[in-house]
Length: 187
Image (cartoon, rainbow, N blue to C red):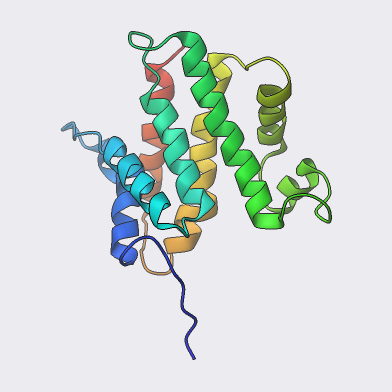
């Protein structure tokens, strides 16, 4: 008997469409294309209401939304830092708790993170944001982009690689877009 998996998306093509909005491969084209990341965030927000949303999908939306709110002309630097810190903390905490269960048997957050290949520096930054000073905007931007790269490798490729062949160009496009985001926000 086939195993039934309940998802908030209709079919895998809908998930692939959202993935391409978060990680557009057209970033290498000379013609600028519209930024579809806000659309992807709105779709994920609707999926969250339906339930059964994988944490990696929600975390991708939260981290991306933090990047989209990084506008000092409309938001204070403090609120931008707080948005990044909240998104990053939810990414780390939710991922570790979701994958290995919170409390008890899993050991420390560092142990649980290392079991799934999450960089320990991610746990350290989350701890700093939650229990100490808010990290600098430069650090939060950098780690948010690293987290999106990690989610690409950990979830988006692994989850969908069986049905979608990604060439080196697509992979490069992801890193190119993320590096452009870092270059556009140097401080």
